[in-house]
Image 1 (cartoon, rainbow, N blue to C red):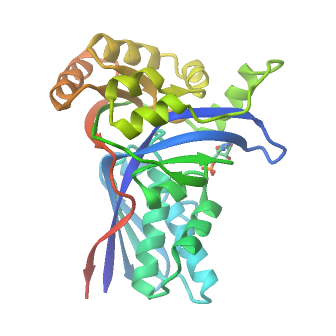
Image 2 (cartoon, rainbow, N blue to C red):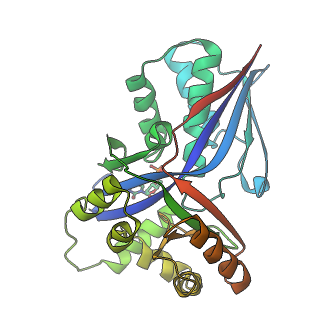
Length: 301
Ligand code: C5P
């Protein structure tokens, strides 16, 4: 038997970051929006736990126990007192180390796939607890749609989205390490007053209405200055997308993927063409949001 789960990428339409906590993490007000770029994770019984990966940049995906998909299988197996012997295959389409939660997505997908394969029937809350142990963005990958994450980003409140948003994503030539971007955020903020992170009411209103102009006016990412310090060329990508008519241009999460909100599908295609021709990024994709969270798409017996 094998089980396949499809899982979306995310963009953070608001990422408000507080000061570093004693545990090293930062309190966030993190508004996640799932976007229709997907990985597919298939689990099959095997003699031992192993991970394979195919797709663009799959050579950059770790195949050892540091892969969140492997850790998800181990965490669920440990809870249910069984061995985690599965072959996890990741068909990768979400950019690697791009700030779009690709690794987190695979963790959530592997967890749901193993729960289905093993018939462990963990409750939704139990799955969400395991996701939160695996990483701050993993619970959102399970839930999808749109949600406000507080704490480290793992305490979720589902949000209403009243329409379809059209996005263009520009992938950079190299990755950025999330801890390094948070460290740079701390360095840039040294000696400054860092306010408590709070969700923006205009932003939540824009999502609920499905209004791209209002959303464009409200998007923000407190990690963007830090990502730009570590990766200055991203400023050129952002400028190229703005000049191409994007309503908003921002770094996605900790980057280095940049996200461009377009008014409609046609405008997204135009912005994507201009970005492709600009020579300021490696690849360009269009996608719509919201997208559903991790979903079982195939069970083969
Ligand atoms: O939770 P996750 O393992 O995805 O976080 C990766 C890294 O990002 C953490 O080790 C930490 O350096 C940083 N981080 C943070 N505050 C958060 C989430 C992540 O400082 N709320």
